Image 1 (cartoon, rainbow, N blue to C red):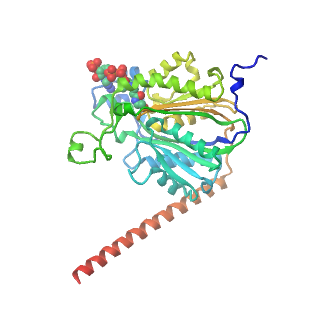
Image 2: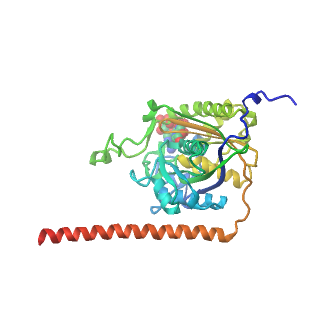
Image 3: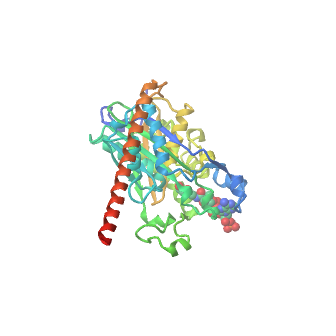
Length: 391
Ligand code: UT7
């Protein structure tokens, strides 16, 4: 058999790297079709479908937050890997829509999971957030620092778009996806990652107010500066170029040829962007996972949600080479080649699920007690202050 032209780049098998051992997703149950949006906005199902490929999106209810969706996806990932939250070393949440500016969403997740040994932080790289987080998780494992890392992409962009702006609000949906990474020394796992950024394009896709550059005030609210702003055409041109470039770089870095990639999971922004990339790379569309017709653009959640759906549809088998590629606000881009190494788990013994629910329940009780104690101390302090002043 002739040696592959990439053979000299092949990575040795005994490198310590991260392997995906668990995965999970969450999408809110409330689904909004294009027709429903067209009832209140000057748009149409035909325009949205033909320009973007999107037919519907899942939107968070008023009670749902980014961290709650992230927790649901993380619990599903822990369950599919049959892992214990106490064993997690690090939690990274890629998100552009955290519950709070301070503290991090990752800490909310850590608390809800009862992941008492884990460090936790958010990673801001827009829609590239999940692949960025995957790259950081891989590096934390490869360095020997961590054994088990939870990587999540979660966003609630429906809260940041102006629902009167037809050029942006029709694009986005809400959701979360998670993977659990474990240190491994076989031939599977994350083979390569490529990260990139071009901050000169930050105003192509951004939320001007609410940060230190433009703190919130009456004017910023009145002028709609807290809404997401996007130059759609510019982002489109950037996306079609960078998707191909970063994908090719990641494949080369993994020591593979594009023909050796079994499945490409791109950021789900617009089916025309993916079709254009497929054409440029001379690849059939069947090689790509596309589910944006149902979910719209769920930002950092789009790639892990698409990964979970591809697994559920049995489109991924052990030994397959996957290419994940994202792009988004920053501007940022990120690509990763993953050799799939885990057979989908069979039915879990139910006592293991009960054990995990006990951990989650204990974490909830611990968290409530802590909150109650802090609030009680605050009330006692305030009363003591008042008595001091009037006494
Ligand atoms: O995660 C990364 C996030 N963002 C992206 O990836 C977005 C990348 N960009 C895109 O996907 C596309 O640029 C859009 C889907 C946002 C827009 O598609 P387009 O083909 O570039 O449309 P356009 O902005 O050039 O607008 C064409 C026309 C305009 O009307 P005029 O000026 O030609 O009369 C728009 O006002 O379509 C109009 N338009 C709409 N019409 C009906 C814009 N949005 C809508 C709408 N319904 N929702």
